Amino acid sequence: MRKSVACMAVLLGAPLLGLARAATADTPAAHPDLSGVWEVTLGVRTRPGPRRPEAPVLTPEYAQKLADFQAAQARGEDQETPQANCVPPGMPGIMNQPYPMELLFTPGKITIVIEAYSQTRRIFMDGRKHPDDPDLTYNGHSIGHWDGDTLVVDSVGFSPDTALGPSQGYRHSDQMHIVERFRLTAPDTMEVVTTIDDAKALAKPLTATKVLKRHPDWDIAEYICEQNNRNRSDSQGKAGIILTH
Amino acid sequence: MTSLATRLGSGVLWLGLAAAPPAVLAHHSYAMFDMSQTLTLQGTIRDFQWTNPHSWIWIDVAGAKGPEQWGIEGMSPNYLARRGWTKHTLKPGDKVSVLIHPLKGAEHGGSFLSVTLADGSVMRQSGGPPPASSAP
Image (cartoon, rainbow over all chains, first blue to last red; front, side, top):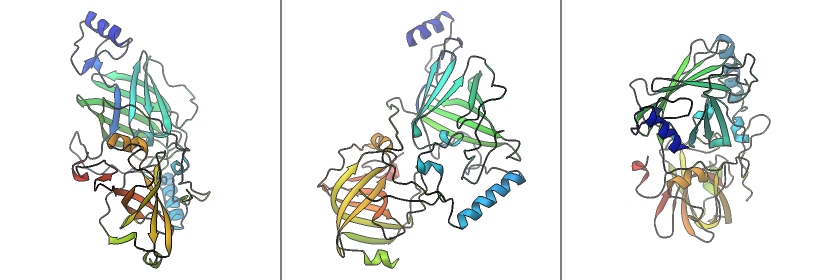
């Protein structure tokens, strides 16, 4: 497959330099090669700006939800996230885990295999639009296109069951819309600029930049959260730990 | 904290306040651990669970009132395996010293920081030597 794609690129006269390889059969122009296993880095920056992540600016309705959450925490409730019970975080949190993800390029589709919680995102590159009335899911419905050297992924259709972050008190609505711009800044360094808007929850769009490092010698491993989870929280969200061996 | 003070036996060395390194975010809150405190457990490995979502080190130590079994939570095998650990890094019967953040309560548990093996080598979540300051 790789050989055939490379041959096509040669036939089309595309440069076959390290960063430029034909990504899919239906995108014959050479695009930057974003394939492989990537890990979110901590503290690596690709552009100037404040070090601390931008805080969400919530609408009054969602600011009240946050205040209610913080009041519950002050009472000792809601100490834990659903992830303590092995529920995946959904978007955008699933893209900010301490475990790597693998980007796979096949004709018309990019698949992101996320190690944490064994999650998968599918990004349709075949020109389709979002459904008019998408089912609401944790990871949403994603379509992508190339803007020069940048892969632009547009996602909608998110279940409000998941949090916006940085804590569970920051909620999003079913109107959340996420645009991610993936770009190589060095052969094995990728910047992802994520912009989130939500007409119900956010008073202004929220932008965050992260940097990922490619690990050519890594493979995605199994992650079965329920295998030996000793951190279940109770129905009030109180943290627990099971110490019986 | 009297419960902590009274449970200290020969195998449990109280180090008191220490500068807590930032926790690597895993799948749950670390609010249950006292991240401002560190404790050293000296004892014998009973079991090393190479499992998700966390590895667990089970260690028998000599407590003030008799033998104690402690459970120490570490990062998942997925994280550790990429940093020099294997499922054989700790074996039942190994004599080790484990540095932890203890639970806030009186239960015998904690969050893993580092382990010193019988040969004197040290393994952190970020891997073995060189020390963590030069780790990625």
